[in-house]
Image (cartoon, rainbow over all chains, first blue to last red; front, side, top):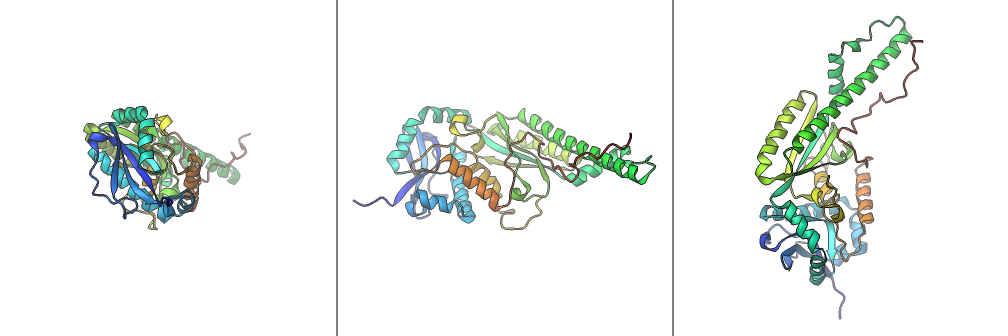
Length: 270
Length: 80
């Protein structure tokens, strides 16, 4: 007997009747093809991966390598995305790996009820991302212009003028913050009305997102596919309006519903 | 909006978008390769460190608008 050299990487779970095509995209390890592992009405989209790359120790090492993570994450998402096009899909967390086909099948049996429940809830729906990025300088400039109080006039000594200016700047800062927050909350709520579910995620940091503005909203919405156009149109309108207040709105999607799997399944639904 | 032209910027869908979902969300089912959620969180954390992030706070909308250079202790009140 020889030690196994491969394991099963699972990308997502789909209803057996709505399984996506498996010819494309490429699996994470392109030496292997995508394969469906089914247990009754549930199927997992899987592929083989080599233990020398995905075994526990190798995995820990590789997950510290950003280029490796990028390649795997993009391949993972491409497969999940294809499943989304084919029908309902429950995306699994990156690097969900089983010993073999039988172990995947056992998981499908064990998690049957919550998986079926999630698929029912997610059917015909997709995730959309809405981010709002404020330009703090421009926002403050706007508030300053708006508030005549920002002149600092009336101070009769240099010291007093200094503190008056400080105070005004603090007010300007608070007001611009409030303005951005109100815009973000308003947009979040209005879009929420056109979505089946919504969640406000932590803002991505400037360093990580490589963006110039301050992220004041990082929301994910679960949207009925039939209402996606409407949702996007509303986002665009809100974006046009926000631009007048130095806030940029970004819409991206559709995504597989990564952020809308239930709490016990590891999600963070609202 | 992006003002960054480094390796992470504007590559198809931004990597951060993909990672936020594939690594930060999605169903967690324990597989046979024991990579605990804590490991994933650590990985995620170190990824954030790799790219220089400090933010781990989950906020409400608008919660993280730049505190900026003005978030200093209030100057003494000179009115008195």
